[in-house]
Amino acid sequence: MKITILDNEQAFFSRAAFRIASEMAANPKALMGLSTGRTTTGIHAALASLYSQYPFDTSGLTVFAVDEITNMPRECPASCYYLLLQQVVKPLGIRPENFIMPDPMAANAEAECRDFARRVRRRGETSLQVLGIGENGHLGFNQPGTPFGREAWMSVMDESLDERLRRENNIAPDVPMGGLTFGIRDIMSRSEKILLVANGAAKAQVVEQALFGPVTEALPASVLQLHPDCEVLLDKAAGALVEKRLQAR
Ligand code: GLP
Image 1 (cartoon, rainbow, N blue to C red):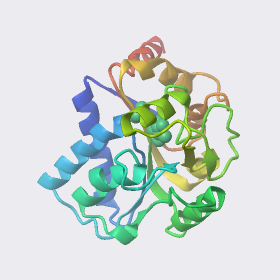
Image 2 (spheres, helix red, strand yellow; image 1 turned 120 degrees about the vertical axis):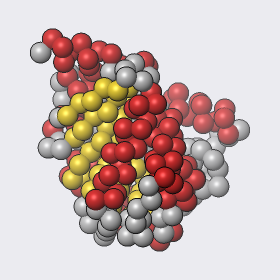
Image 3 (cartoon, rainbow, N blue to C red; image 1 turned 30 degrees about the vertical axis):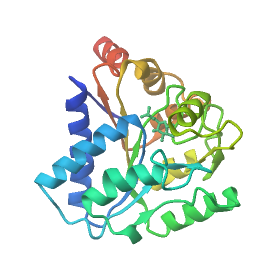
Image 4 (cartoon, helix red, strand yellow; image 1 turned 90 degrees about the vertical axis):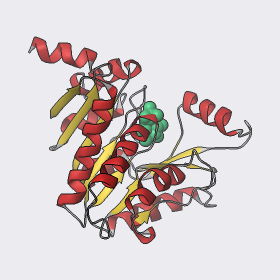
């Protein structure tokens, strides 16, 4: 596992953007698994800026998000669909038919998960899957305790995200929201390469545990230790404890 710690947040955003852009440029028919959240918002801004300066052919690229929030319409600025559309799909001119996302309002969410995974699978193997990590170690919406063998499914969001999304988007407490996500098994078996990204001091401990602690379903991101081609990019704050581990080696 290659781990790189960047000196500051801007360098982290730029390096991650460069890694994604080089994958896209080197493999114009790539299937790219992306992630949404605060971490990737900075990365996507750097990616859009990189692309505007050094455009490459995006007509054959396909992108999808590893997860989506159910019962939140696509027009809502917090939906993963909306975030990727604004941050990546439009700025890079990716074709609408090559942007694969589940329907967050589907009446049968479990069936929608299976259909989403099928539609992605039809495009082949994922060339590069970009993943953020939750402060509790979640990957996609696979929360601690999720079996590693799980395929695309309807999980839950962690409480703090649920609370933040409701507050920021005026969603009433009685509106049920869920986390439709690729399962750990999909992520591990369908991604040729994985790029794990984390920034900020709040992630330092969970990142260290995920990379150096035991591989356990109690910490979903720890499964990445078993992936044959996983690269990790961290900013200095998120990498503080990892840096100590690497120095002690
Ligand atoms: C969110 C998403 C993940 C994301 C992670 C980190 O809940 N479901 O796909 O990678 O948690 O989010 P953030 O970057 O906002 O900390």
